[in-house]
Length: 331
Image (cartoon, rainbow, N blue to C red; front, side, top):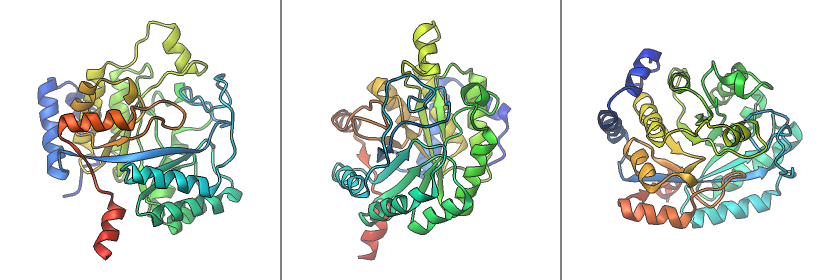
């Protein structure tokens, strides 16, 4: 049965308003209908080009508009990226995600990007790239290289978007998603909560994702990591405005699971400050993917040892990657 793409904001708001036990029960029921409840996909994220981005995203310390002291780097060497991917695979990751701090990739960068995709995929891992906006031709090149997923987040609700980013529009985001989908690449698209938004904004954020022509195959839900020197980081450090309540964060995960039942819902940034209990509730609410390691692009992460200990306590296990399974089936 095809997942619904006609959710209304009122329906989504009603889900957010459910008593917490009922919301978790509904989310867990949907999750179990599509996935094994004790499996979580392990992904690793590597910054292949850090800093120097001309966009003014208020949450990002890689923006040239931020004053964080982060030094810009050039695109990593292909061999170094493949070495990092091999190490990630040895640590149990089944998906390797590569991110570059660009508004959009230059055509001169595409040959190296293509080689990275091909090399990681040859290891039997799923591949994901996030490079900013793409042209149709660039999306086609990535598809030809075998890219499994392209990440391009909508970040927040359409109504709040202009308060967070002014250098590109919400429509620009959707255009890149169209190019990715038309090229035959799976879409990875989510956003960030805890940026001072209201629940109505979170409703709008989920609504925008759940009413796309096709649900994103992967939906990362980030909790803002406030970095001093960024617009939002300074706002959250210098005012009483609190980060998102952890129960409200779990609610957001649960509503994403119910409205997008076949998507991978990933706990992304912010896990390093979440309690084990909050993460356990997120898994009960339908989250089934995490980023592993001590670092995401430039901010901290929970770390492999803590994740392994948590999984052991919960009786959960890593999900085998689709590419790995395909290769094993062919042998």
